Length: 233
Image (tube, rainbow, N blue to C red; front, top):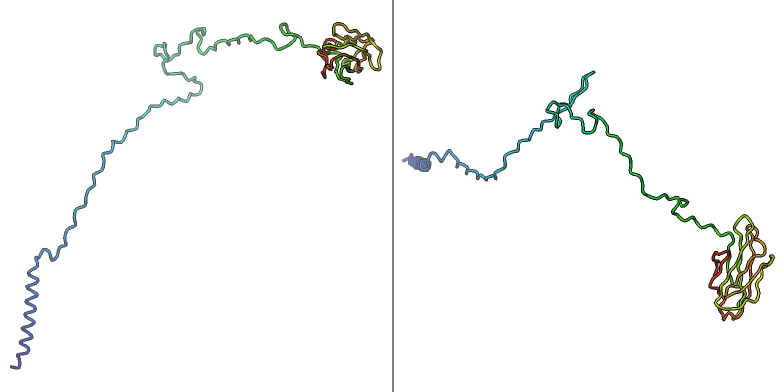
């Protein structure tokens, strides 16, 4: 009876060992030592690519270096040369290769000369020797006193003639201020005064005149000195 507790303990241990053995034997042997194999990878299809192009080889002809004392020659056949490699001379070149054609003379110009002194161009008008400037000195309504200032622009003494054209009016008197007097006349509304002596070089003299019954019109329709129009009208 003294061994009875130990018997119960041993029996319990044996029962536990039996349960563990039964549990181990219930599992398949292959699954205890091997893991689950990985799933296969998914393959993505690639698009079709064109075949690679093969580079074209171009044959290049390099010029040969001439040897000392030897003149290089052209080896390609020329047109009409029969494949001999000799160039055919151009037509009209005298049969000599490398000849240069004669220069072509330029066509004659048809543009007229620009010199105004050549025929076909009018000569330039000469500058007036004596010029005149018209001005009004006094105005009396139906009468006025006017003046033509004469200037000799040359280096020599010159004579002069003044002509005035008025729409209406009567000449009272005319005189040259500070110089010898000339001759005056009135005919058909045209007043003409001619110098008594020549005007010295670069000298200036005033011709004055008195008109009446002009009707208030004291501007001449024409004023000339030696045929050249006066200024200041």
